[in-house]
Image (tube, rainbow, N blue to C red):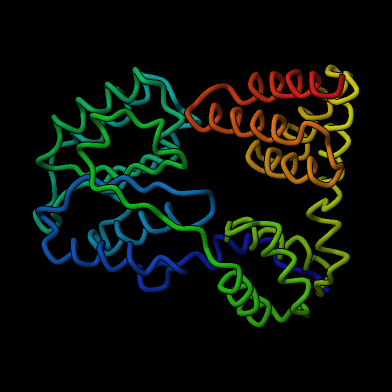
Length: 318
């Protein structure tokens, strides 16, 4: 059976706030803000990947701007254009464009992955936010709110998006399976939800990839997700404990750069592997993993930190 080339995450992306999955409190608060649009503050959406932050920003913008959405929304990805020039040129040019339509309250600038901006770019952005407050609203989107400078956080209403519950992910995947006329059993959908850990976007992508031949099975899901990757992390831990730091680092980089495993998942699997292998010095190894997890969270370079982690773990194998 030939499958559509259209990405399901786009095909089924909600267009109304009420269609969002599992963000009831946030949606309720945003709907309250819509009652008096002219006084709506700048917004900062934070939370893990694939939980609806960007979709919410687009839905909110559509509800405010209606048919004028395309003319009065600027959507940028800060990780693609992360320098000071992007802030000064593109945002400033759009925000100061003359001729604001009297039928709309303001223009909207959606800045995705704002936590990837440099401090200089964020400082420039802060000034632009101040200068254009009369006719622009910013919606900043960040996975890691701690990397957003305090002066920007204080100028925004902050909304924290929660991870989507496994049952809700499975329920949503079931609805897609029905719409796309694909066969899938509950076990295969549950394995997708377990693997993605609340990331609905990744869940939908995995479902579509697994359904390429018209049916979804647990074997196909495992093939697509590379479920054996947790075993690869175990091998990396063994290499580190054996003092083979260079080999461990190379395999770690391959997992992250080539196979797309996130640093967070790597640490999660590493933590589990410590128990699976019944590593000696358990307390010390776990404390070391926790230390580097925190360093990455506060913004240190992940590749450098994970390399240092593997080097430190090697000390416990001697």
